[in-house]
Length: 64
Image (cartoon, rainbow, N blue to C red; front, side, top):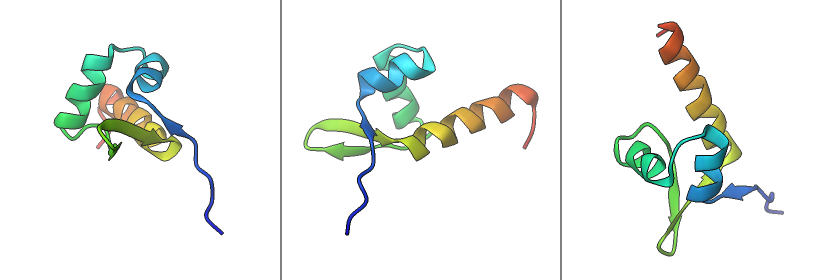
């Protein structure tokens, strides 16, 4: 049986990480945020969110 994962839109992700939707798209383009397309729209999993937040935390703290 397939597990159901919550998928987030660009707008939802931008609200969660407190940046503009355009910045979210820049993060995707720059490889800082993992996403996939469903049709023409980007989608993110909770795991994508957690990985991004953890990478940003490490970046701020200067941790490799």
